[in-house]
Image 1 (cartoon, rainbow, N blue to C red):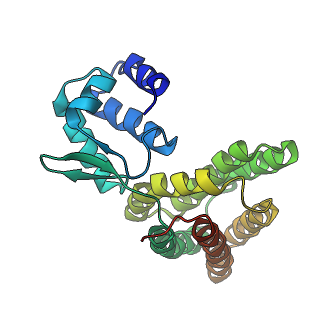
Image 2 (spheres, helix red, strand yellow):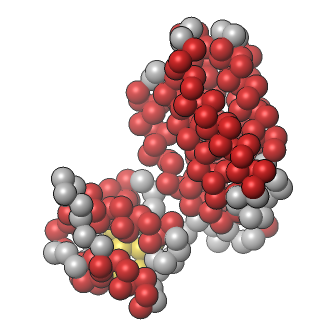
Length: 234
């Protein structure tokens, strides 16, 4: 990692009410997602502890959390390896998310939510539209992520929510690589509008189908881009 990234990481300190382990998880995760801890790179606990200005205990705890999230591999007595992004991993993750989010859309439609429950999802779609009109793909990606979170929340199954959050960072990492390589995502906005309308109408099977078709297409596009640019298991 370059000196600037090291200095930036070292200057950050936990905010009040946040443990050293939580802080270490957030800082290390951001360094990985920003590719300042590069895919395939190896790091000693002592190196990471010095970088963040912490003892080794919260670093060790943080790396175990990041390992569970699929971002690193902890190798006893050999430190930590940042896992490479691969098209094979993303294909598997998208298969899981496709089924769980589509089920969430179906569950949400069956719940007959009051109209006020849909405001956050509606706002997310509006932010997606505004971001595309402004040509701001990063803002679009943030709003898209918010919509997917809201879809799962509307489904009301906490275990689905936990699983989707567990894979969220890996999806975010792949999106960061492919965001400016993909076609303009106008179809995504339309698909989100359609699934939300189906949920509003109580059309459970239609909501599930619309979202599943959207997620399948998103997977094909993302995996194809990752393969095209060499992100695959050797």
